[in-house]
Length: 61
Image (cartoon, rainbow, N blue to C red; front, side, top):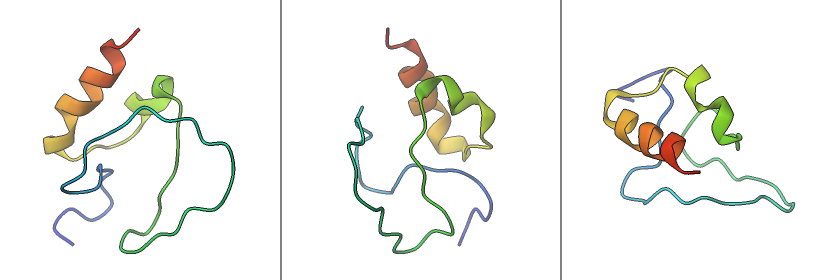
């Protein structure tokens, strides 16, 4: 892993605004995967490349 312990969006995938209605997450590569409310995004140590996505998500009303 190039950025251990940093939070990042999956590579080669576009981020989506989603509502989780149930089921389990299957983690294929990362140590942890979670769903959070956008109000919680600033509380994570994001990879530098993902910061523009986080800022864009926070600007959505």
